[in-house]
Length: 441
Ligand code: KE4
Picture (spheres, rainbow, N blue to C red):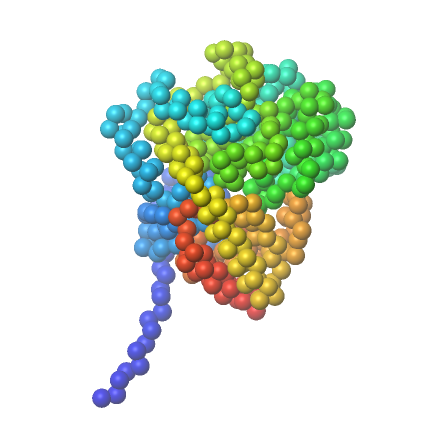
């Protein structure tokens, strides 16, 4: 009997249910999404609708599984549906999960954060990173009695009006709105300088120093892709702020607990005046926080004249999952494992790109990784923008079709979690080798 050649049925990775779900969503959700980057406009195609996730793997409505390097944009450092976080949530759910009144959950998380983060003696919880930075700016203005804020081009601090600015013409310039609906008057108090450029920062302080309330910066930029601080940059900002009586605000919404228990300020040994946190401290539930030394935080209502409030701030469910997440990060060897997995991935991607003859500039701080389709170096937003975003889009889809879910934009950061395994990292590298070869062909 002639055996029929066993024909390997091609893996048909249909995404029909995601497409249909996206159609439905677009009728009632602006753009079909609850946050713009999820719409895949930077890479093209239809966004995946996620049905479930466990560990380092997410599964879409069509049953396709992907190794996930977005991790809900940073919070899921333990991986998805992690047992300790789940157990913490269950315990709270049995007793009620929102009271609009003080609970010991928020005190416990605040004690943990104050013990870990060098620049924090006292904390205020809010519900997002946007709220954290917006409130930190108001607190800095209230504490100093000054109006001007300086931020870096390419750093993202959420969507409060005064921070939706982009650089005007010239080096150190007053921001121009980067969004419709933001009146120029609201950005006229925000100065924008290039990231990693201490001369520009010095210049703006020389010109406006007495009016500057704070310099707000991502100590490790994660929203232009991952761009580490240049040597001496953060120390220079700290010195400029001290010399001119301004406050240094570290937006550690992404880097807090990501690059170590003490965040970027612990890694680089620079203590800011105010620290903003989010993402990981909520373990995937809506949380933000800002903190400082007591003398600054005592300006906050109900103690002082700076007002800020929130219905769900300190929500027991979010506090419990956040505390379980942060406590798990105190286990011995956690950051060594994240470092080993992330270094393995970074080295593998570099080798694969080299083999394909593809110019790839990589950055990494702990388990925050950047891959820029260009020779580099990438040190700020201007250089990041020189990346080949079309190549990144092709890379994104070639990886997606091989079961690897990367951030759907060149200007985002990849995250490795404690749930990732060496096998999954190696599978990712193998997929990247194929993707790079296809792009380079
Ligand atoms: P949220 O308001 O999105 O919780 O946080 C704003 C924010 C503040 N600071 C930093 C350093 C941040 O990275 C963010 C938010 N990060 C983006 C991803 N790059 C969130 C994803 C999104 O906007 O959908």
